[in-house]
Image (tube, rainbow, N blue to C red; front, side, top):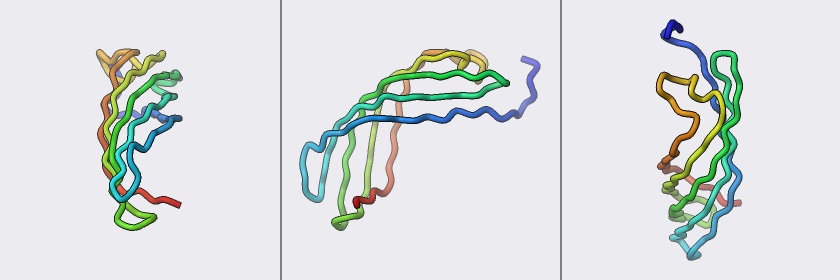
Length: 106
């Protein structure tokens, strides 16, 4: 839409939530929920999206303080000016996510 092919857009998500460990031990499945705050700055406009998501996952502890994690979540967010990120981008959207990595307990 007349914009340069490359430009810097910033979206910084913050999550506040809780999770419930279903079992303790070396294998720890969990469920949880998050409240999301997603401030963004696009084309000199700012906006804030808010949303909710449900989470589930598993921690596999290799030692008392280190392990591996797999996590999936799904939810939604809604806000203003996020349709400026890309053509046909909506101000309200579903937000699926999957992640895996290491966890540290201290």
